[in-house]
Image (tube, rainbow, N blue to C red; front, side, top):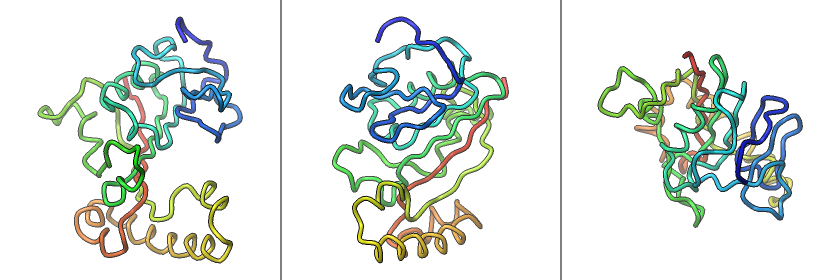
Length: 194
């Protein structure tokens, strides 16, 4: 798509696939999923005006892109000041279980958007409000493919592991995540301050 798409609703869902979110502009490159906007997220700039979204969600999309830092700079560009960006990506401990994943992510990812970390800073300043590791991620998808007993067992076990991981995502990521078979997802909640 060329030109700029309207930002009706001021909420953006990137890489929507078959899981469109009501009230969001749903973006995907696959025409067959019938998104609101067809766009290849490897092509820049994105078809939206500067600072036009109050909320952007990117669920399991950055790991598929050629340049996730360029994508994050674009998300920073289209995110309004005070706006929130929620990024969910595979944790490195289980990030390469899908053949199309190009990378896994870790607790160090937010450093790239912190201007005080001069060695890594990517020119897209975002303040980290929180992060969370998830052992049993994307339950909406798993419910479609797992038998009920496996699904509910995974949900229950995931809640226990997630609780312990939330005590210190850094310690979990650096030490004990492999003891439980790795974590499927790490979620970052950012806000654009300026």
